Length: 140
Image (cartoon, rainbow, N blue to C red; front, side, top):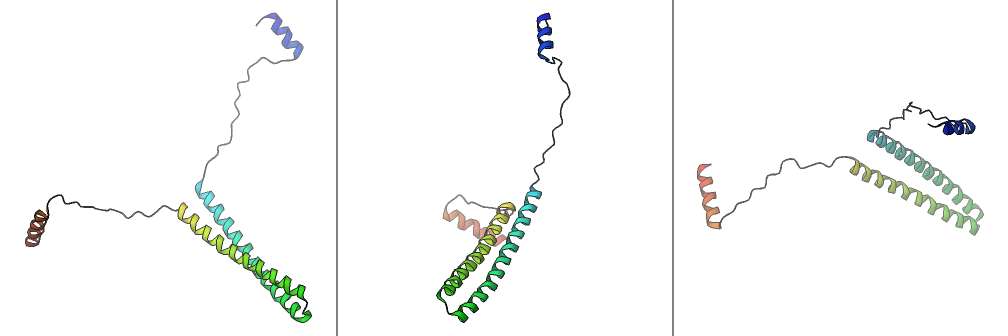
């Protein structure tokens, strides 16, 4: 380097030395088993939450129906109807979750192959095939 560069580096407080140290980055492993375990955990948690919501909703429906019978007020019947609808939708979400879990299990698990499949093909006339079959029956 020239003297001018050195003076400029000193004035601007620039370090011209090359740092040879390397930073070690963490190694990221893509673990499909971990992903499956987390998906199972999430599905289990989701099912528990939905079960709790359905159970609490059912208790609320029972309570609002009692209140509606006692008061005979139209608004309580309206709220009871909305609550019944909400509990039904939550139960439906539970069934949808169950279906999605089964679909994920199908895609995550290897498909079962039928094993060995032998396809035999006879090339020839009908007469030749009949002769072949007769000979097989005589031998076997």
